[in-house]
Image 1 (spheres, rainbow, N blue to C red):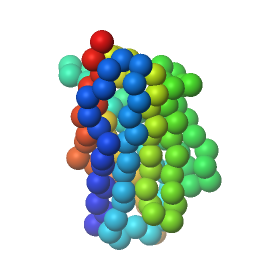
Image 2: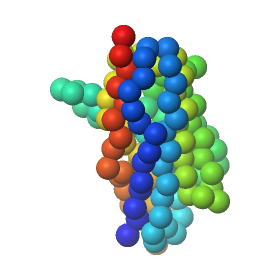
Image 3: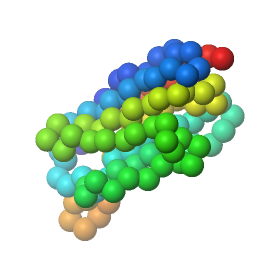
Length: 119
């Protein structure tokens, strides 16, 4: 089993910054990608940022230039630095890990961390 533990969420004023962390532990064989999703009340979960094993990144258009995803492979940890936060960034943020084993991909999720941006 793989466990993902997120931290770093909280309440911040518009224009402020937060840094989310997600540490993976357990039976991790090969990590293909890690990323962050978010879900606001009444909305579907959306991909915010992702990073592959070779360091390639992708971002939701609305966060480009404000959020930065990074990972520490030695620690199996992924980070999301969020700057210039806006009230519309308010959501529960979930960490995601895609691991490969024996030719199959396995999807794992963290429990979520609340980010609230006040105007």
